Image 1 (cartoon, rainbow, N blue to C red):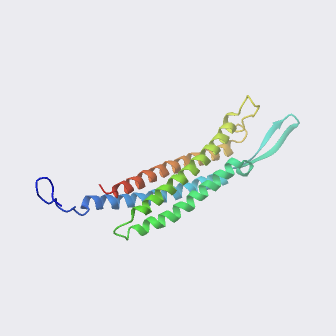
Image 2: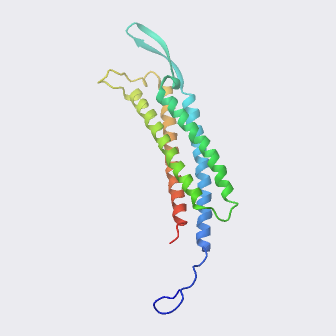
Image 3: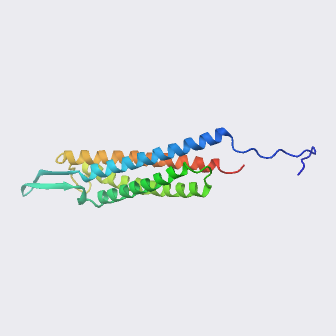
Length: 193
């Protein structure tokens, strides 16, 4: 095919060494982020599951010993399940990402699949963190309008565990956002110009 000047354009050059190096860096970052997601999920789950405390609470009928456990709140149970799913997902995708290192070319479809699933898991983790954070905030501050009393003045250790677990899950959500960015960039680099 000739251009207006009557010359044939040069054939497209193969991917440069810079693009290959960038691709390997993205793959390495992807694996590291997936391992961080696994670690954050495990820590958040362990801290949440170990959040148990029994305290003496003053009621109109007198003082009673009342336990506080994460199992007493559906939001905290959902939180543990969601982070368990994220942890399992990170194991599966880390293994898949490690297998990508051996291949010289990876079809863009695989990056698309990872990107979609990363966004899905991000939504699940963000929803669980928000639900647990909302219940935790009620426990910390109470709600005078509906006569819900704050409980963190009685269950300090329990509330610290809940807060720590929610903080770590926020870190996991940030890791998932970074995974979406890395996989989106990797997919973008494979779009022919």
